[in-house]
Image (cartoon, rainbow, N blue to C red; front, side):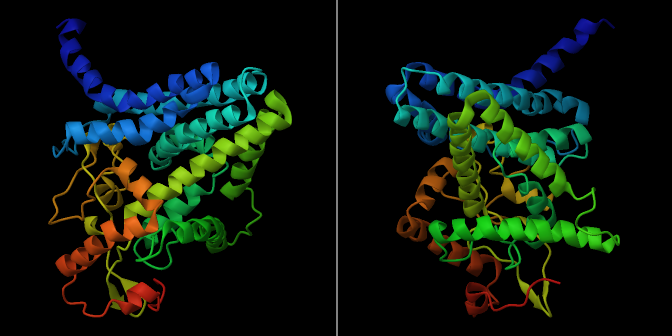
Amino acid sequence: MSSTDYSPPAIARLSAALPFWMSLGLIPLVWTGALWGGWWVLLPILSTWYLFSALDAALGLNLENPDPMTAEQHLFWYRFGVMAWVPLQVLSLYGLIWYVTGAGHLSGLEKFGVFFGVGVMTGTVGINYSHELMHQKNRLERWLGDLLLAMVLYSHFRSEHLLVHHLYVGTRRDPVTARYNEGFHRFYPRVLRESLQSSFAAERAMLARKGLPWTHRSNPFWRYWALQALALGLAALIGGWGGLALFLVQAGVAIWQLELVNYVEHYGLTRKHLGEGKYEHVKPRHSWNAACKASNWLLINLQRHSDHHYKPDRRFPLLQTYTEDEAPQLPFGYPVMTMAAMVPPLWRRVMNKRVKAWRQRFYPEIEDWTPYNKGTLPPPR
């Protein structure tokens, strides 16, 4: 049998993966803003939040589930798109620092606008891709994930996500689970502080169980700090103080983007307390799900978050979606929901009734939710 006999299925796999490469379009949009200035600097913002919201409305939902037993070799083009993003982001971020710091046609406000757009790119795509990479067993992929996080000065997210969030989601021990009635503007400073503390504490506890001090070279925080120092130093070397300032702008925007998504993903959802500090196992019902087609292309199925928590090692093209009987559904995709989260009264009006309906659907036996709301239940064992 000739090699050409294998072309159709290979082409089919490539064409199936291509929609998930739409995020690559953010790179020329950011560069367009840098080259032309003016209102062009808004292109990354308008595309990620507004264009994809419109596409979600036009294209609707994708309720189809892939075969979760699909062989790894059939996922090559999906993996390639994620891994290829890393060098592209490095070149774009530092290339833009070099260009923008020397661009006489851009005002200070326009330069800020360009790097606000860069932060939308490194947050919406870069951190999201690092999330996919950090969950893999392949050492190269995990290192690539670390590089992406270092470029936004949020390297501890890997430790927090793997050692804290996935273990304690839906409980008070997880900083990232937004509490019922907690507005984003209260959630944000809390999670910035607590996620750093909890991630370091988790790594220190892991080393202590091996009889090692936190200062041991195997503590990943040494790698985190070294990579972040390298990322900052390179920005300063290329663009001086101005380049360093622009780097910090995009990092701040990227972190804000990440925590907006974290806020949306688990707002008000809690695991049932079984007594004596024990909680039920994590189930699809403990994450908000969204089946919006276009924004799942942009976010490589991150909105199929219920299945991600149920099967954390499942690669993004194989993530399953769930019905309303199995997992709570967001009324819109993340682009719309993150914008709503910035307006707490609007957010509570949209989401609190859904949290109450979720409680009635999945836990009708719990009559008093006060301990869950006030956080008076004991921490998980």
